[in-house]
Length: 256
Image (cartoon, rainbow, N blue to C red):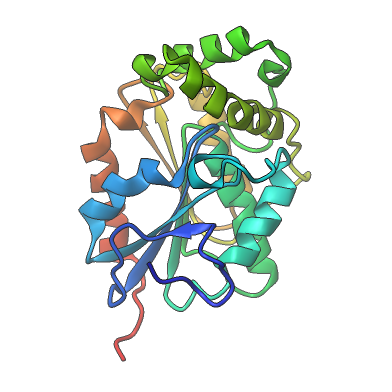
């Protein structure tokens, strides 16, 4: 697996490298999630799009590393790791917590004079929309109940005590990062934003998703798909269609 000069191979995963692709998609996982969640996306888009999935510390092969329970710090680290991956137009896709991380990483790229050509914010209310939540302060059973309610983790996994112990620290740290995040007032990106939300998502109302339009100085569109917080598990074909339409119209890297 090749890595960029700025990445040590820990942060950026390419499951189906497409070095000649004219586009690159960077995928940011949800709370408790890992880079491998986006393996089917990489398989579906290769070789037309080079897909890079971000691996946060504290999970899978990075389980022994300290967790990062602060969105700003996590965005700083991801931004540093992604330097060198911008040799072709970047598109960001983040689900749930990943949407916030993607937004903050995009802001950091823009400060350097670059940035993605579009940001897809999936299953997450706009950064300026705050809810008073405290899942990270609950006991283990409370966190497990929350994850089950979101249908983001296979119930068979949640019935395995050893696996629960493995994922709970990452879940708690990620929930803390999300629940303590406060968006800088008036924060925007210069790229267009596409928000995607499930029509029955208990974590993001349609109004909260629509408010992403206030965080871009470019275009905005909203897609509402059937389903809850993890609508994309059952509506993968719809998500891929939206991405395909974007890449068909997006600026491409020049050959040679």
